[in-house]
Length: 572
Image (cartoon, rainbow, N blue to C red):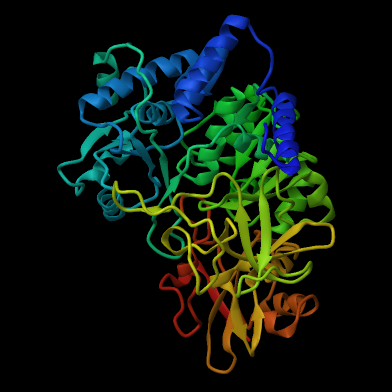
């Protein structure tokens, strides 16, 4: 390790310590250890390499459980190998792209690994896309093939004829095209491709059309160690994953499970009671979910939740959108100190992680940067701000995305040098300063080194000359008894330039008034943060990943929602 700085040596030691503590690195049968190391050297830390190593180390261990079957690591690797041969016969190979339009099930994991085996880029498609959007994504990503669950085959009618359409069926034993490809393919092992394939995750599209973001392959096990340094995951975990795998958080869970040789417990659709039943039935030790999933669990009456034994659960990890303060405290009280909140994005992967102790002391915190991650708060000129000052959040780690994608030709890599609003920028305009990429959010560090996210750059409004963010208003309103959900958005205002509108979902039978909402906010925040308008809705509009669709909220009382039965405007 000559030439490494003291800091670099210390960080590598901490990575190794974390991997040993988690059981990722542990002694095994000598023959298997030798084969596993050789496999890892050949394939690298790709999906194909990770699952191949797991098949060598723990071939009989369960990799995936879904509604239809239980699959071991050995079985998964064998089926993925045959599927890779089948895709290759269709012309899918290094540099080509195969899109996956599937819900969470074992077949989706097999298809992801198969694509990795032949060096293809795998495009994870949002199952909530409309047919027109599906066709657009397949066109802009230049996909050669699409593998889709049977329920989505009808949405592929307008897909270009050049794209192979492969039915994934409901599972093995069906006459779907994917099973035909697997049955007709040889079992001959496949060697590593000349070019490692990558995974392309679509951005959520809450503020516009979804775009493909290329995820880099991990440079090694340090990426998994970063998460494990703040979330105490262990080898062999039983992980329930209701978060969609096409979402960055769901895909990250697959990568972690691969490194941990953990069991993924999947289901195609989510209901709160089914999720609790799965935790009890499989004695699940970890839950990886998006915030709205945790909220749905808390909406169940306590007697219903108490029917299920969730005592095996050590970890409930949430990411994907802001975790409301009321949800944080409610979940900790209902399920114990098992909650971990990861703040990140499709572009920067992770920035910080809050553990149960952090969330107990400061429910609104995003936590602290994990191992190997650098977070800075910068002003609009690129200068670092002191503790307590709010500015733009920049993140540096080993998993910054490679850029947005439209064709097979790679976009330029992000520059390494400093940049600012008038200087160089990273992929597709993302600002990069000293190797740290802008998240698009604003936040601050407190005196204890904990990060607080106040809102997105484009969520900030200027009301009466004051810069205000919706997040803190949402947290204050969300703490009111009887408030189930709340979202705050800015709208134009003739007098103040902009103003806030609060969209509130109440529990059944709660008679909260708009004046009560405003008075509560006025008692906690400055006057420019008080929403002048309040709309009570039966639910908030969300996309398939559970994020609130901002465009559906940015309406004014002068232009109320078309569906008047969904909510009632209440103005000052």
